[in-house]
Length: 110
Length: 113
Image (cartoon, rainbow over all chains, first blue to last red; front, side, top):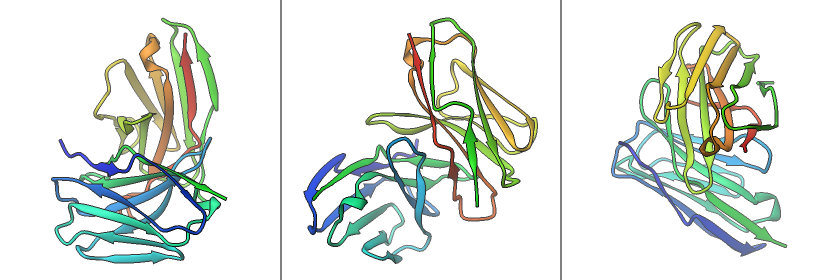
């Protein structure tokens, strides 16, 4: 069974700080996605990384796919209260299916 | 704009009741999915469908069934609700063209008492 482990599960920091969330597996994925979910809503896709070693930036968010395509990280620079939410990583496992990590609940305090 | 809608945001049912959760997408997507989301467990796949009248079991299908009579609609059925099925249920769809990008509905929070 392919599993994705996210860490930390909870993170509470002050506005303006930097943070990194990790998503690790012993399995290789053809691609990996990051979603953000806000209370009362479904997850919304932020980014998809496909190539080992790939780095993608989305404003203050930087996503990296590990060289071996088994892990990924999300780095947020100068966090803002609007970044608060549940961050989920998801690995592609064939036939359009995804396996999700447990999620990281991020709180940015003003 | 891509849209996935779910019939209810909140639902309270009694143990033993038959429960129907409806999901509709307006994007002409082939693939549709039902997940449940529980704290600390992430999203777990219950059932998915590649086409009308096609269904495949996911990782936790026990106690659930599904129906897909039309391309845009995917229903999740709890034949006899139990308290351990209290959860957030999320529906998603994907075209199969993009790299697995899934579009989610807002979720239904089901409480079984």
